Length: 227
Ligand SMILES: NC(=O)c1ccc[n+]([C@@H]2O[C@H](COP(=O)([O-])OP(=O)(O)OC[C@H]3O[C@@H](n4cnc5c(N)ncnc54)[C@H](OP(=O)(O)O)[C@@H]3O)[C@@H](O)[C@H]2O)c1
Image (cartoon, rainbow, N blue to C red; front, side):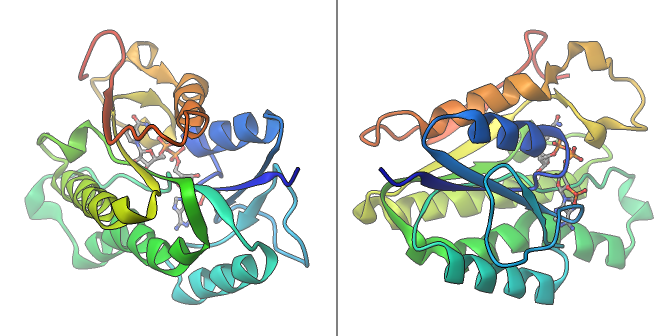
């Protein structure tokens, strides 16, 4: 039986890295990742490996789409996990930082969805990782809240658009997960956060749900709630 191809976007660290490891270890799965610190693509994609693609670089994005479409005929799941934080008082916002942030967190998943959607068959999965910041506001987080609300809005629209094609689409509003996105942020106890490996267990399980079952929107939080 052919193995199922899964793409993890943002597999260089944190949740994406943990998810790629988990999926690669599952029987029947051929999982690869992409991020800036990945290895360069030679002629074939090898399961468990994270390949280089800078989602803020249009050429890098286009090159990756070309390599993938010429190597794989189908994709069983895409996890959209790449992203960064832009946390600051609104008066400190610089347009270059905002453009980069929105391109990574919002434009690149929209572009990749558009370019790769023709490779998904009925029963396959698109999983978009938004955040609690994609459903409520937090101070000094307005660019991040805007990008994560935007991603959730995009995912919900894609869910409606793809219903006739039987493609599953999940929007995830995740609470605090202990990764480097929290580095340098005061006032949060990392011990209160979900370990990245635990978040990966949950995200992987979405793919293994029956194809007759779509988890449209999911909120998950650490036991202490929204931190
Ligand atoms: N941690 C949380 O509490 C939490 C909660 C809700 C949602 N999220 C979301 O989870 C996602 C992953 O974040 P994380 O918490 O796991 O933090 P992280 O460890 O900083 O992960 C960020 C990921 O994005 C990749 N990335 C960053 N810039 C990139 C670029 N220009 N091109 C390609 N890949 C890029 C990174 O890999 P490279 O550095 O190799 O490029 C890394 O794999 C983000 O979308 C974040 O908003 C996190």
